[in-house]
Amino acid sequence: MATNKNAQIRYHALDRCLGNWSRRFYIEDLIKACNDALYDYNGSEGVQKRQVQADLDFLESEEGYKMWIDRERDGHRVYYRYHKRNASIRNQPINQEELDLIHDALMVMKRLEGVPQLDWLDDLEKRLYTTSKLREGADEVVSFQHNPYLKGMDVFYKPIFDAIINKRVLEIVYHPFGRDARTLYVSPYYLKQYNNRWFLIGKHDGTEYLSNFPIDRIEACKETSKPFVPKSEDIDFNDYFADVVGVSITNNPVEKVVLKVNRKVLSYIVTKPLHESQCAIPEELEDGYWKITLKVKDNYELRSLLRSFGEQIEVLAPESLRQVMKESATQLSNMYNK
Image 1 (tube, rainbow, N blue to C red):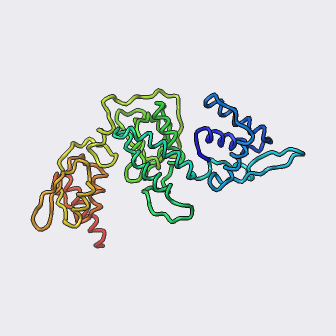
Image 2: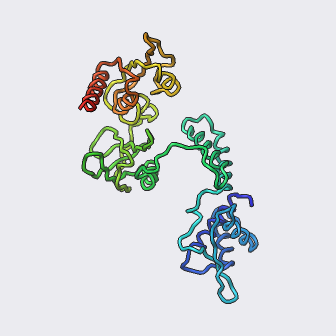
Image 3: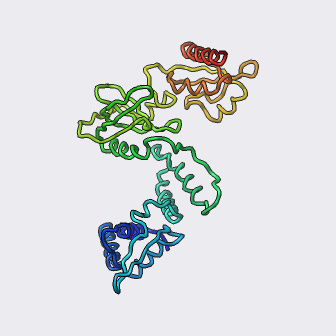
């Protein structure tokens, strides 16, 4: 059975009936529910008994949603409901026909290819393609980076997103590491992902600057009726984060960061640049080392990234960053020399 918009509307109308144990739905009720849903959507109706029975079979089928539907006798009549209370197709994994439908919609959206805000479509297409090609029971052959243990995403992402779109102030309970939780009123502007975490960018009450709040450190979140503070018109978030690694914006100036890179990691850094400002062609130094330059602000994420390479990278300039990295290396060495 080909899946289309009308079919999806019927499936969800039936799903609402079958999952409602507070009343009995006979075949006439199911037909009416489907026709009402179609009329509300596009002004059409005309679904007949035969179509609804085919839809019920599809909901139960392996190719459909694998739902368990009971047909209970009530005298000479039969009413329908799911075998388990609160069952719903919304709780089922996406099936192959739904994936195909999503893929078709994606192909239409891909006509907008080249629009910077829609770069994520390429990643979505890869995920849908690899998922749709796997048979049931087949071993996984592709892994996408994600953090299944990241707190808050399942609860707070949608309300934060909605508040940004609708320009509503959020009351959040924010609990930073090593400090007590506190309640803040935030005008939300932007969501950004970095290093497998998500961050809310916004301005909280009593401040004139932007702050970032890791969603996994938010313990509660709700919309309020407080007046929303619009972001400055001269802030474009693509430009705003262009001079930093990660999400931490500091008052530090943009500086030329000069790195002495070991040959062992040169190819890695060339093929996976540390930052978009990285020079395209490294300069060869003596003794198998190479010089790579960046133009960035000094922040926590930059230092963490450089430390992750250990002795393979040495900071030559600026002197302030070199001293910070030197002190960090000394503390690390002292710790292991105890």
